[in-house]
Image 1 (spheres, rainbow, N blue to C red):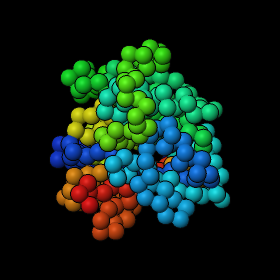
Image 2 (image 1 turned 135 degrees about the vertical axis):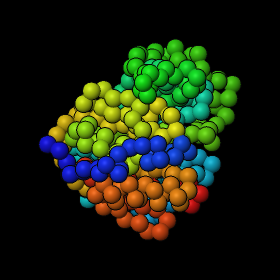
Image 3 (image 1 turned 45 degrees about the vertical axis):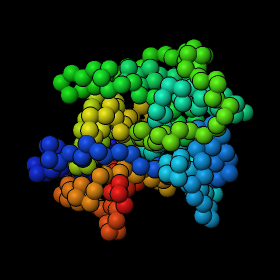
Image 4 (image 1 turned 90 degrees about the vertical axis):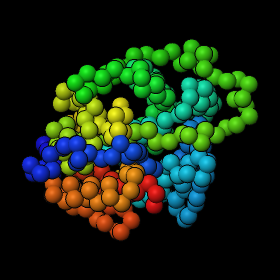
Length: 304
């Protein structure tokens, strides 16, 4: 089953001028939770985020006063079903191997931590967890872009095992580890990986309409897209959710924010989306819209 109808016209098919600008990056992710304090503790104690702002029923977490994650309390919502469209994982990028190793050690100190595995993806090295609500979380570090392998516009990515003990022993700065429990100021949302109903519809939306460039695909099971030659800012897969329709309002993913460099880039994206038949809400500062599975996306100029 395909969720929603999206038929980009010839004018909206992906070309150089229709791509999101190279400086496009990921903004904060918003998660809905039934137990706000529990999730706040997990992301501060393990991931190393700090309180940035707070309002009734919501907490913003980040580094150096910059919001990375927004947690909103929604006690009346049910949890998502595993086969629903929605969040696969939020991926937090650390600037160095030492910073990632420190985060991994902090995670092991959380009672009952749910460790989901590791992945040497050639372009990056990653550790996977589930937060107390079951949201997937990836903590990773990139390898230098000069080490990435590209062929015919596709980046080479693998999934090979990383020995956690060896990684920590090789990279943890034991001299400075106890001096700070927070992530470095450079930490940020590196990418967001979604569960969707089918890959062709995801490609029509995220590439042809929104303007990301496809960086690699695993047949019709997964799609990876980015701006500016990054390995991926977003990914979509059907591993658990093939055939999923539009998602209900549940706990878990509330919103994904994408930061474009300026108002011109925002306007160009709005025109592409509108031409593709996507309903866009423009509040004068940002635009918001849903993908075909009702995953809420917001585009905001970085300088706003």
